[in-house]
Length: 227
Image (cartoon, rainbow, N blue to C red; front, side, top):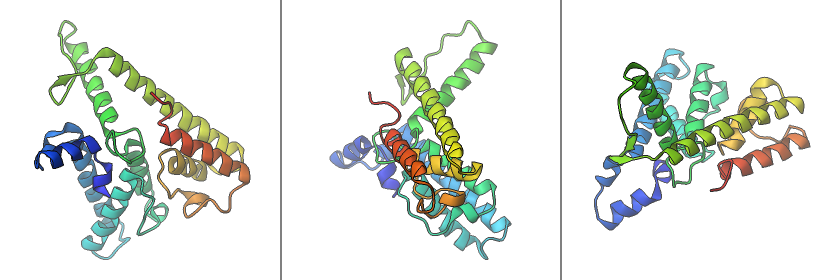
């Protein structure tokens, strides 16, 4: 599953040059790997702390599988994460909005966009303290132009706005808040399992909810807008 969330261009370079270290040199893949490791460890410790499972090994097995599945949008699961302690589903929802790498099969906003927005935020904080500083935003040693930066922020605003509107629509069609959020997360992020009434499937919801979910899945696969 994790390999499916890596940019296929990185796979191509690594295989063409017989250079597995190419994965480690790519900044997006490194962040993606740390997200998986950090998310898996946090969820495993949370499961162990709340006594959801008897041992750390069992907790880690379930958490690693679920975190990988959610980052890559496979829809597989070894447990219904909606039944885990409340902060864990929220953690997994956040990871689903991040998703995998650009140029992969994963859904979500993609790691590279989140990385760039984070660095832009840090850069703006630095400018507040040093207004005369001239610093260019770089990824992997390459500068990122202003048009690309504006495009990423525009994408993030649209993605968030569409998600909120879809949640509002789901609630207007009769779903409770938790189920509405779960339905939107499951569809726009191409996640699979949701929360509440849609934790296992969409079989019991109204047909209008299903059609709105179809629209959300199309929007998620197109990443809000084509470019």
